[in-house]
Length: 76
Image 1 (cartoon, helix red, strand yellow):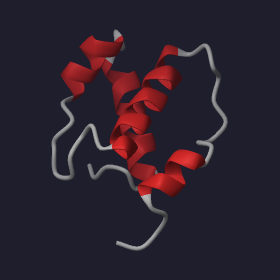
Image 2: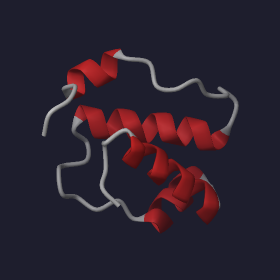
Image 3: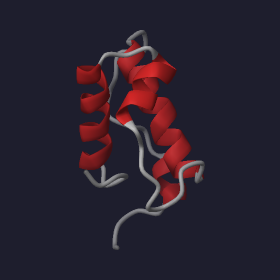
Image 4: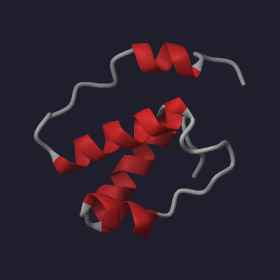
């Protein structure tokens, strides 16, 4: 796959976010974990586990996953 390396993505700023939003904080945390290799390629992210971990509703989790997919970090 062509595109930036995980190291380049870690150094880049994600799209502008509201720092106080739980959804945005969860997104930033998941993004960093993916880029640092905490989640291995092919490993499934379970929406229910994400919702419980970050205390979010299903809609917020789906928005996070869509945002990560739009960056090419996950496949839906």
